[in-house]
Amino acid sequence: MGDMFDVLKLRGSIFFHSSLAAPWGMSLPAIKAPRFHISMEGNFVVGSGEQVRDVSEMNIALLPQGGQHWIADMEGRELAESEAVIDACKLHAPLFQHGEVTNRVICGMVEYEELLSHPMLEAMPEILVARDISHDEPLWQTVSLIDAEIRATGNLRSPIIDRLSEILFILLAHRCMKRDPSPSGFVAALRNPRLSQVLAHIHRDAAAPWTLSSLAATANMSAATLVRHFNTELGMSPIQYVTQWRLNKAFQLIQHSRLPLDLVADKVGFATGKSLSRAFIRQFGFPPGDLRKPKPEQ
Image (cartoon, rainbow, N blue to C red; front, side):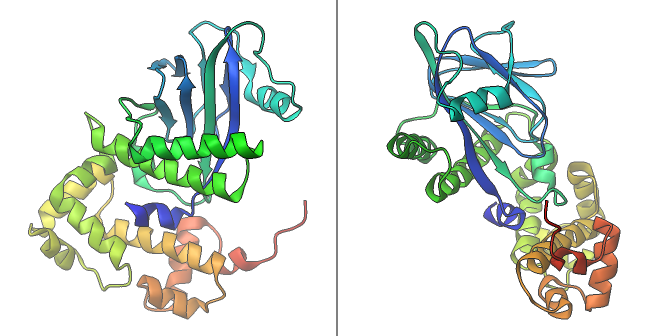
């Protein structure tokens, strides 16, 4: 699964870390960035649309699609805008401080290139809650490191905290996918040993001359069966998935290197730079060279 996250070039951060006294609550707008909320002390609830989930102490709520949602000590609370809550903390005048402290919460997010997508994130439920996390589990050890670093430095942002946030998200997503009782889409494909094997081959070697027959052979199934499984779980054919994966890798190589387009094409499995350019325009709506143009100053 690491290769899937690697191509998205995740950028983690913590945006909220505070002790809170009930009543409290805040609303968060929709953004294209998975977000997570950690209960260090006390219980709270998280809601999105008609879905509401209880989050107990040492639980972590994950919103993989970054949809609009809210968190509060209980349902029905008046909600402050998250921007106002975060700004108050930056000004050393945090909100929800009157009375006995009932909660300690850490909130973070992982950003990635907006034009890239992956069916894994899209297949995950709107809200997931990781429960029954043990103190010696790598997931909670990572949480503890983040908490300790914030307490030691007094800052939410640092290279250490940002990298730990990325690790936390990967561990959290992996745990949630393994324990999802009703997997669908890409998560279900990963649970299927044969489809998982095909995906692993594609991710491991995007430049290989994959054909429907060769992919079917890796799964020891017929081409028709493989196509049916891919369409059912991923909503696309195996060759369409190969193309999407190659284009995502090409996007990152073009954006983060100075390699000539023909060499990028060779590395990700396109015959020529021209064929890569045509596919790139169809997928993203602009030519590859635009990624290397200087961005206008704000």
